[in-house]
Structure formats: C-alpha cells, structure tokens
Image (cartoon, rainbow, N blue to C red; front, side):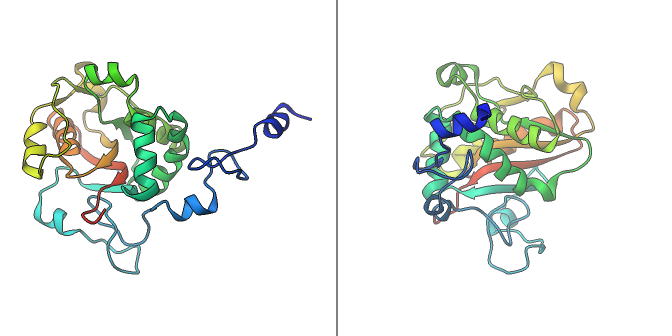
Length: 240
C-alpha cells in the first residue's frame, strides 16, 4: 500500500467547514456546500456582485458601479460574504486556517477566467508591516499565490507596499473608507520596472466599498501599469 493510501486510512479527508468525512482533500460536505454562497450566473462586470438574469455572458453593472467611477476595468468575486462564505473568510483571516487558501485558489480561478489576459501579473493587496507582524501572514498573498500556481500566472507578492498604517475600515461609511486609504499604498520601488505596461490582477480577501482595491489600483496606474483588474474571495452585498 502506498504512503498516500496509508495516510488516507489514518487521516481520512474531512470537510473544510465541519470536519465531516468527505471523498477528497480540501472538499466540502453536501451540507456545507449548500451553505456556501458561491457566485454564479449574471454578475456585475466591474465588482462581481451577482445580478438578476439568466444569461451568464451578459455584460452588466450593479447600481454602485454605475454611480461610482472605479479605477479598475473589471472585477470578479468567488463568494458572497455571508453564511459559510463569511465564516471561511474570517477563519482564513483571523483563525490561522491557512489550509483554506488552496481550495479558495480554485474557486478564485474559476471566477477569474473571464479576466485572464496574456502577460498578466498577479499581486496581492498588501498589509502594513505592523499588522503583518501581529497576524504573521497576509491572507491576500496566500490567495494570490494559490491562484498563481493553479493558473500558471506570474505572481509578485511584494509588488505593492502599504507604507501608511491606517485604522481599521470596520464601522466606517463609504466616504470615510475611501478617505482612510488615501495615499496608503504604493508600488514597491524595486518592482516598478516589472509592472510598467503590464496588465495587473489584484487579489484581496473581501470587497466591501472597494476603497482598498481602488487605492491599490491607483498606485499601480500611477506607476505605469497598462490596466488593472480585481479578484476577491468574497463580495459584501447590501443584504449580506
């Protein structure tokens, strides 16, 4: 019997959500799958929010993206930030559940397929060094690395730096969120040549107002990126 088979006998695969036995590694049981709000069908082409409609090829925009000027050209999300989607994001972000990055990478890649372009450079939204020291890892960097491996896309984990330590966005309204992130993110000086003229795909764990992604996008465009697309694990909806 091979080593893998022996390990499966001793440590059978368990559901990512509830530890129930499942048939494959990094999988969800039927109940947890049903409680995980995967985004499919018609979505906002700019932020990935699900929209009414049956034609998944339809190019549409949500009300927010019709009113706000987004600096990026296209965006997608894998999950809605509610139920099991919210639970897994918080486990990855605050619960040291680094194992979630691998399956999340495949969910993100599925969402990202309409946005992948030749010569795409993949980069995570950065954490300030102080927050990185406290958390020990950047969950967005783990997600970006997972997508990069699966898609075979060039990945630059330190393309962006968060040079300004900003207070938490939690509890702030939209205007305050954007103001809080003003001039907080820059392109790493040693990475400017790498990204000039390139198509950038930014990866983050959650999009609420889009303020963080807008700040990161502005930094990329100011440093010479051709265009920016955004990809998030979970999108906050107004009714979430």
